[in-house]
Image (cartoon, rainbow over all chains, first blue to last red; front, side, top):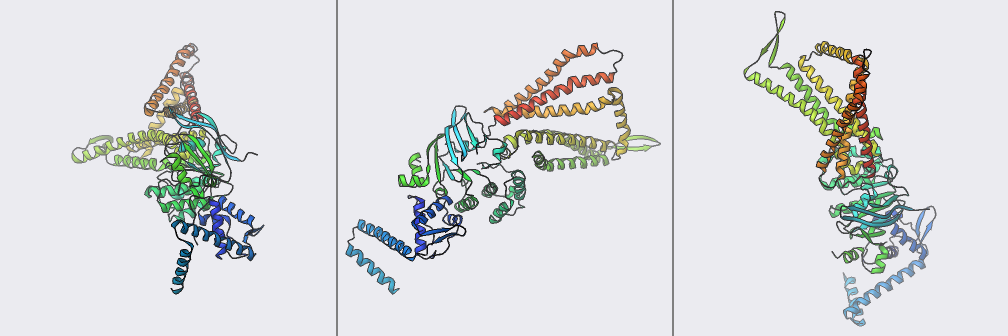
Length: 124
Length: 233
Length: 272
């Protein structure tokens, strides 16, 4: 899962989103340890300070926590991860709906398109 | 406690009738990666040379970790000029010895490791190398120092995209959270992700001095597009 | 740090000089073995025989090449001396040298000492090559000539004078090098016509040097002559002359040049 950053929004908010995504996708499993800041920064090709700031933000929200000596971990609280997941689903779906709305599709049309596409994918 | 690693106060440099740097006042803290951005001939190189005392200011002053430029501050600054300053007759290994001999903070192992990554034989003479390779060696030497302040003049200037990634990687890999990197460039898109802080300079004056995320949050655009807007190029 | 600077300065120049020295010795040996003049011992006395024709021409060319090489070594010594100073401090290499944690005076001293060593070495090598040719490689033959020359010097200038001679030469060499460094550094200050400015400063220094000597002569020589009485030997007189009119002006102008160069490199450096 590569790091995808847009160039027109603050980097640290995008980093927070990307890490949330990676946690939801199980790339960083609950209770698992995160790579050190330097390594994450290098992976994402961003400034270590910005990565640090994103991680601190996620710590504040409770998704991550620090053990003083051994590093930074993903929370073991499954409810919290589920909450992040449902928030992400809502956000992405809302974006999608907005986009479709701008293209002039009505809700039934969108539902129709989604279900037919899902059907196709199932058959593959 | 004064935490600034680099300070310029009303720094001015004139070349005859031309004012290259015009009353620049700056304070750059430790632990930052700062981009000095501006079109060609905006005074970036002159500013960096003034900080190294390769040029004598017409007015104003520079201080590094609170000291006026001198032998002591030269121990603190690792500088990459825009010129080729290395001796053509030397081998890569000779250069590593040279840097190691003069700079107490030079890490020889790190330098050899970087040459290895570049797939360069330390016994090769500079004479036999391409321009791009020499630039990479120069940057490797500069980044092999463990200095509190790096002044890099156009580190990604003339190189191809693959080399650009290599160079950005070198900078990120060797960056120490207590050090500050001030780098000048006019190729912003490639580099804005690794910067904390941006200084725009035009006709020798600072026109903007903000963090990358401040710029993106306030203007809703990348530093690169803001730069194009400000400088209309 | 000075030691390290010297190490790299010698390393940067050694290959060129040693190559030239080697060539000089090789050509001296060739000239010693193949000469247009054959020394032949005939009934106890030495007789010169001149070779003509093709071999003679060949030997003549060999001799000419040798002279060219001697001149070449001297010119190169001078050129390298100043080119090293200019290129490595005021040229692109200056970006490296002036970002080293080294004081400017150490740069000047390292360049000066290296230049002196090569000047002395070049002079000795040139002398050696002459001796090789004139003695046909049997250097012991040179001894009588050398010892009588030293004897004459000793007689005319006294023992102190014998030491004064190399001292004056050395002081004049140091002053000459430092004055040229100062001229180059001053010339670099002007933004245009650097070469012309450097040459201008160079002649200004030379004139100042000669002017100083003449001024000293005018002011002090009458007094010195007045005191010249039967108790003063020619050797003593020479020593006084050398000290007052050559050694002191050299030291004075050398010191002034050094101070000026150091001041500019410290406070007025502008590498463009």
